[in-house]
Image (cartoon, rainbow, N blue to C red; front, side, top):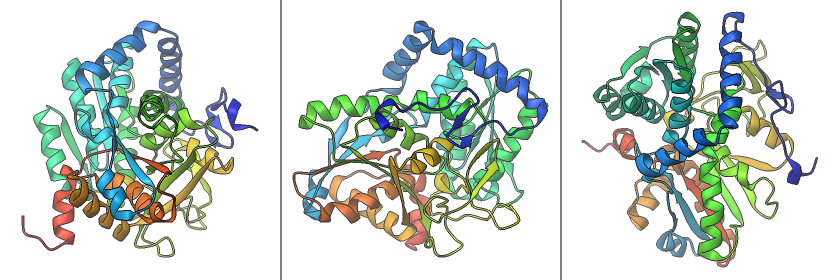
Length: 402
């Protein structure tokens, strides 16, 4: 299949052999209702007009592209440009999607929203839009993540959300998602589940992608205006993968642009402590309602994950990413904790920008590869979030007292 006429998912929510709907029967009617509501909203120009009005006046879009000239000079290779999603209201790309889903919830007459969160950015973005639209909000978060992301937990509470700690399993994002899905089953009539990444059962992966595409659509116009062409490489970090699919999707048919997704290499993909299903050659499995590459043992038990960034600490990957990997349209690599922290430091020191640890993984790829490229080449990095939320984690790793 040529990438110029790329179309996915199919009518059953499959991207190639990934995706679909693998949920308890009790959730099928809710997902059908959601799919129907989204198809109708998608055809409604007023829905998109309201979405874009909110992105402009509430979020502050478009987010600029920025030439990291000092960092580029330091690395003496390709020019590094940043898509500044860290400048959005709430500090990350997550709000693009939560506004879209909240507008859909409002359209469906749902008064109560639930969400899962790892790094807390999606939780904050969900709590933000719930306050904005006058909805009740409950956010599920792993107990370990509550510890390492304390500032975001406090922000959610300030915004009026109820933060529910999850102490089961690995006490991280995977378990928070399990609990949120259980809660949805119990309260399906009045509750809208705002999934934070391009994963979950159909129609979520497609829907989240459509809301996040604003990133890549803006970048294409901005890069054309800034350098008179598109970048040679566009790179983004991948956990579930919403910031990455938001950047990549508008570029799929631009075959001259290399697309690079960077997974969390943790302590190294040759160790058990990472969150890089594609790079480590994980088999296909089913988790959280969809089929995709998944870190699991020979009995199909989900393996534990590790990443210095709570937002990438997830054993699966969004189904569209798995499909784009199969098509060889996107290359997936991993950056380990150490490389991410080094990139984090470099951006702080050379550009005065504190990046999220998640985004630092994408930056790590650029730091490693820019020196091997020509000075006339351009790497666009999706700086998906700002790093205020991560200062406690970084301080701990550097043994600095706060």
